[in-house]
Length: 343
Image 1 (tube, rainbow, N blue to C red):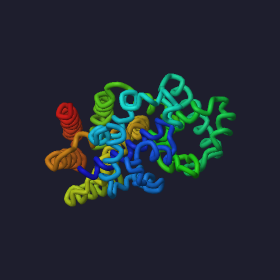
Image 2: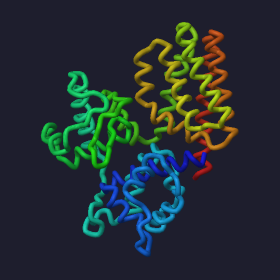
Image 3: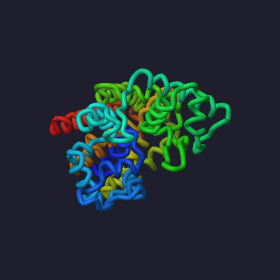
């Protein structure tokens, strides 16, 4: 679990930097300079940190915490929750952000309906470009100035919209190289909805309600409709999940967890349900990880998935539905318990 927390810290630092409108060098200069002025972090090292490399994180994080008054625990939360509370976090921790002269390059970020409108405008532009073969996954977007002129919107607002699409995994920002369409999850049709979900209150509860509506019936239908080829796919996913569980490989386990759930909805033969699930996959994974903090939790999650898989292979629709319902109820209980403990 420690590795997961460290990965959260790296991703949350990247989110914080972007929401403060700081380049990597500005972020280092403001927050990672110790009192003696000795350099403790380079731009390349910050890039590694933001992308999951947490070697020697403690030393760098100590300097950051001293300079900001932030405690490590505030950064070690699931990234979806961190993004959800980013405005309040910045307002409480960086009141000087309203004074650009005191911290050059640092601007307060205000999320509003305007940003959501621009997210939709940008999403529509990219969707049309993909449909018309103008863009494809991995392509670099036009320069910010050019894109702002094409869409007839301000560059600062465009920047926030691109940041929003980056947070939900549709765009990839590579400092010094530009902004690119992500190779995976390029569903810009659902981008505005995904961003609205990300900043909504009661996100975890709402996501679990939607999952219950979709997945319980999907499990029922999968037991009835899955072909032999579908069952072989589910078997392979579950076997890989079993291997990750046996070796206590937590990050691969959670990825396979999501693969398993999406595969069930897919083989249930309802494309609408499948695309809805795929749209919220990243948020699902964040909140599933929130409900796992011990070896006991990991064991419970694996056993629950084994019950679902067994019901599917036995072709017992009612049992499959009940097993999925039980798993989602227990997932809610685990998440609620972790949040209560943290409060």
